[in-house]
Image (cartoon, rainbow, N blue to C red):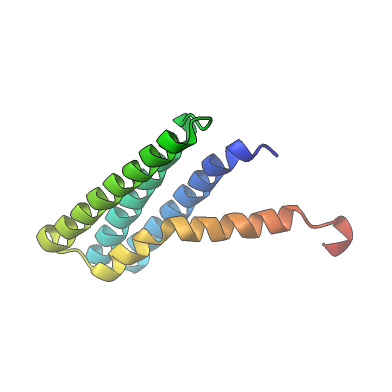
Length: 127
């Protein structure tokens, strides 16, 4: 397995978890919860995609400058995410629990990916 493909796989699984959750919210939850979930999940997926793209383009042989650039980009994205969350809560008045559930899409995608890796690496006699 190529380790360079792991962020793309993680993003794909997180996007799948997001879509399944969005469909479940559409069927089972009130509209304000669904809007909060949709906005929170979209924000965190865009943030993780930007982070993965920036990390992929980094020139790692020059460690000090790359580290400063990656950390600076991380803090800029964190500040922008905080501003977006404030505006979503204050102006759009979405359900904050739905928003938090949407923000947890990426960690849930990591958990699903780890379960899939575990299932894929089992020996036939264990199955």
